[in-house]
Image (tube, rainbow, N blue to C red):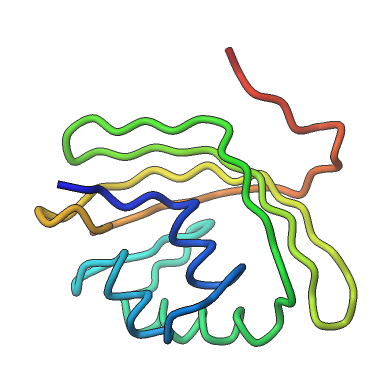
Length: 126
């Protein structure tokens, strides 16, 4: 079974979208998906609405995975993304994600938190 990866989901959802939003969501997120970001929880419909708004404001983006771990249904990942917005501004954030997979390998639940970073602040841990 293939398991979803955050980096692939980010690319297909917002950075390099080639699929319709619903198709991309179905590919990576289980029907009962719950997304928690900095203490706010969204069900899958609310998450889809948030992603749709994000898609409309981003021109391009990249994601660099710093650490990633899967142990059975448990998932953890740390990445840095850099995005260019429609207004020309850029945002660079380091994000830590913890969650679980549904039986089919799609994300069932993810909790994330992050902070803004400058390019020289990004480091891999060893």
